[in-house]
Image (cartoon, rainbow, N blue to C red; front, side, top):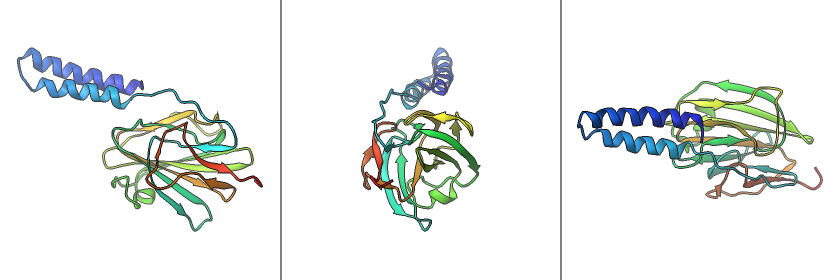
Length: 201
């Protein structure tokens, strides 16, 4: 459980209790919202697979696998409000770049969200490769949380932050990677393999 969920749930439950004390029926929705916050901010344990693989940085549904003009391949994952929103690093290595980019709050499943929405761009380098991924805010989510900093060493599938409520994560792979997922596939952060290193890499 992420601490934010406890804080939100506690505040909502307190509001519901106060309204109930005044014999107002409007207290019930606050209790329901408190329960939803506890559910939303869950943080299950995950076991990352071994080998030269990249795991999904987020729970959700793959909405795009697209070749970029740079020669990279972008895998985009959409998180709805019922998905776990804790993000994890796709590969082991050193965080060599963190860049926050303010922006809009388009629906995260739309293609334009990748470039236009508020986002945090993270670069991880290790084992002779570099993977860039973005935490992208959505229509509801307006708070990106990142727990690491440049220079930190991370393991595959390690927790690095979260995006509150509906959101999106994009992952960019170089030509040394073979994509292992397809559009509409469901993936789990830290557990689902989304790309594998090619044998010649």
